[in-house]
Length: 461
Image 1 (cartoon, one colour):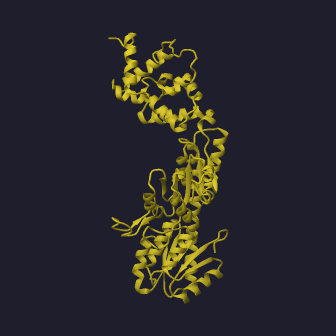
Image 2: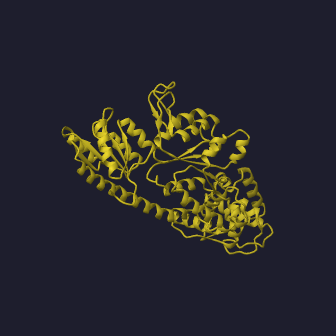
Image 3: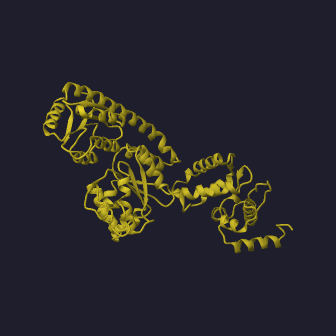
């Protein structure tokens, strides 16, 4: 037997004598063996536990052993499967190998031959597992670097993400709008053992109660009018992967009850059905609300809150880590420079204005500001008047005049505003409707400002 690793084997055979004899032999060799007397029993066990090796008879009373193999690999891609077959079905066993079986073992089973196959199969499983773990460690070092910043709270968050991603526990991600909650969730998924499976974000605020129940759990044929065929729900489709319930605070109470049952039982029932279907998903939830306060007000179930909040990852707002703004700005400048093939910088005055702004929309708002500023910037450097009105008017109102892109010093706030508006107009070829939308004012207000500039002779003839 392979040392230093606990090897678990699922043995599937509908002939009880064979099941007991082979199981007893493997346990004597030091393996941890779970037995299933039918294919359906095996599927349930596969949905609830992890196995390093599956040994299954090809012909079971209720299903084909290939179905057991496919389900095993769906749950755990690295698992190896040995097919046991009678002489009459050897061709089928060879086909099963082409579909992913490790090897086939003809009946009657020779125990020494079985032991040799088990050793080889488990060695392959352990090698795969070590490769997966190595990739995860590399990803853990690289993946969290997508969170730009060296603020102490961000460094703690990066460490927490790398650590808890490896554990298969529920996580509640909290933070204001625009802080990057889905980015945290995706990183947890990428660094987790489930990284090869699906990541499924579900916006709880975008669906009605009835639609959400149908989409989450699916329905049986004729469950309701127009249900012409059976429909697998989202939870079923994400089996083996990670599901993010975004804006979990918006989830209706009746759906909260059903989600709680999923977390407790790890089973679902399709609408209109009675059969319990085992599922294996990791649940992440994200919210910008105070769920503790929602619990007090009866808007959110307390038991569900505690089920979700096994681990809390909180993302601090940008205004609490302004020391990271220069790093974020440079990151976004580089990101959009790659897209348009140019290299742009930002003036110290513009950067100073950004650092004095509170960013109610957080990092998402900062990214939008940089993207928009680059669209307006005709030169190589983003200036104050390329920023949004909220930024360049909302801070440093009494600072010394800044230098414009054309190099003229001594501009006051009105002149900065005029330069900004005219640069926007130039960037959209004079389209006033589009310019007003970019600037953040209505078309009438833009028209009035242009008339004022015209009267003062700023627009020429």
